[in-house]
Image (cartoon, rainbow, N blue to C red; front, side):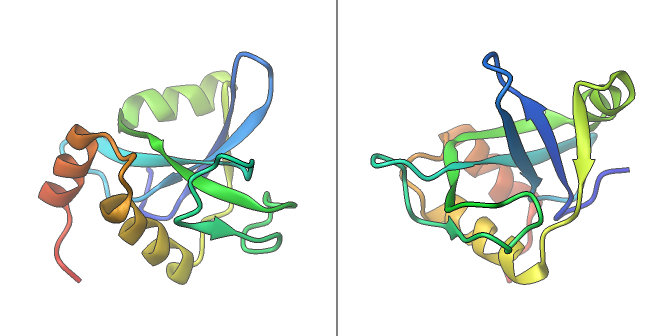
Length: 124
């Protein structure tokens, strides 16, 4: 079962692995996920991650809110079973809070994801 703060890896078409963070508890079989990518010159830098903030992060990285998605829990669980996704360590509560706040603050978060996130989370 997926929980808020869980992470997993998936590979893109170039076989480069990206870390995904689950930022909501499952609601009606769905969760919101955000992608962590290497920091580049034109990266959105709203939420910066330094090496050591998560075991997978070994160089400066960012949360790429433009890739935030609503995903079916069953699809993620199936990806674990067929090997196209790999579970990783959960993020700290502090990092999770930063990532969640960033989703609302980012100009790049897809509107549908932002509205869904607001509908399934309680104000903190």
